[in-house]
Image 1 (cartoon, helix red, strand yellow):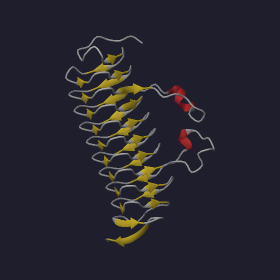
Image 2: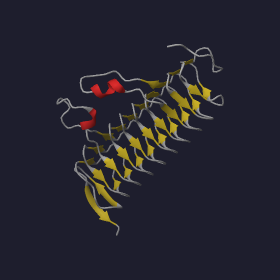
Image 3: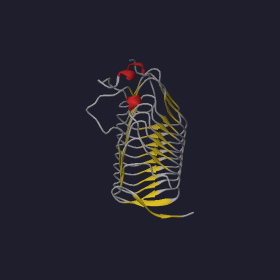
Length: 229
């Protein structure tokens, strides 16, 4: 790959095939790979990696065809040491804090806040105006609606049998509807639905569908505590 000339400093590496708007601010030691499109007034911190392609493992053969555009839309803020893989879409006005890791083909809509050291795995989607706090793990293929809140150190997983290798498309994560509140240190197991407006108390373990809209669930396993009709 050939580097291109730019005005962001000698220690910043931008490869041919990347498009970075001249109004952007890119920090030192950041690498931007081909196929990246960065819109107006985006701020990117130091030591970031943007547009990285994943390595292909035993259950990741579908990644052999991964060659998609990575898009960061206008006025987004990408803080220091953020890694964004190939095929990611980040919406306008979104904020990614230090050390966050966004895997391939993730979609983050507009006005989303991603906290420090959050991991969002492959093919996940985060709806507009959602917030995901420090140290949370979002599983691959997970769908999160608009206006959701995830407290610190929430753990969502997508495979109860990790030693039975399956293609990524066969790993079924939770689906979180709009305006859901997930308390800190909650665990969310695979292949379930949390309905709109539900609140899950901190430290709960969600093992099955939570279907009563606008209700409060808590405990291990999470059970309903009240229900506003």
